[in-house]
Image: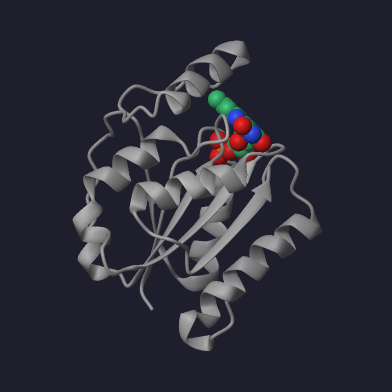
Length: 169
Ligand SMILES: Cc1cc2nc3c(=O)[nH]c(=O)nc-3n(C[C@H](O)[C@H](O)[C@H](O)COP(=O)(O)O)c2cc1C
């Protein structure tokens, strides 16, 4: 199954997972880059990012070159911001609604504490689907990397490898 991992990452945690998935599955990755970068330091990071997430903003992205038709499965990865998924992913989903139809959709969220379940629910609503084929939540998987958290990522990769046909969701 040809897989694309689409993700946004401000501080590298979501990227860390995307790269592990890519390595395990031989998947391609697409990193979303907003034209106006979010601040990544101090209080401003939480104020601007949090406000953008709460307002449901749809920031312009740097152009990307991807043919979604070439993929059977899309894995969406994001950091949780104010119990929501990150705005750059909203832009991607809304810009590619038609092309995402009929794909097997999976998702993972990276968080520091809580809010991932709500964020995944909001992402499902944005996509207009009732469930992901597979989903996972990781706690700062790069910043707090440990054999246990890496094993959790590997377990998610194995579920993806087995695929929906394996009936193992
Ligand atoms: C603006 C902002 C809002 C955040 N809101 C939450 C939150 O509601 N719940 C939570 O557990 N973590 C929250 N975090 C922490 C990140 O979700 C977490 O550190 C994540 O692993 C970062 O992923 P990244 O390195 O890919 O950007 C927030 C971080 C930022 C910058």
